[in-house]
Length: 256
Image (cartoon, rainbow, N blue to C red):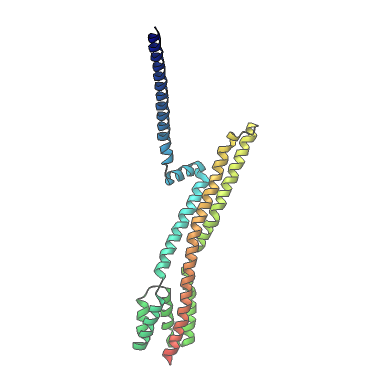
């Protein structure tokens, strides 16, 4: 009887342990399954790329002010890219051009130097050509031509740059305006509901702040391009001024 009781007790304990183990295993499996499903569900959110997130936030901000801010970015970038291409094409190896003009003046005279300038692109070559073209009227006339045409070339370099600065100032201002209007609408909802509930105005405030964020982002992007363009213009203008002085020295030496 004792052996029978012992066997029954062991059997009950094993059965109870097996049941517990099965329950724990099933629970672990269920938890693992739920965790896996949760991770799989969360994976698309984690895999949401920058462009998708940007598009989502843009849509949440509303098509009104967000569209205007986007238009500022597009127009500003278009002008900036056009200016960068123009300025890069306007960059000239001033030292090489000066040496070629000096060699042409020594060997073939003014006409040969003018031919070198005609075959070279850029504002420095154009200034050289205008100065050489007036050498027959005297050094003073050549100097006036160089100064006058230098101002014309500077105006071409700075063409449309003021529009970029306008968009830099306009984008955050539009963003702030969208934020203020969104806040007014949020307070209108509070007044209509007669109760201050966070869930009532949280979405509206978030949407309102998105316009400011996008406006600031647009201003930062355009500001980088604007500073690069201004630095490039300053570099070309300095080369133009140095080249003008060098040209007059060449003409004075050539007259002698």
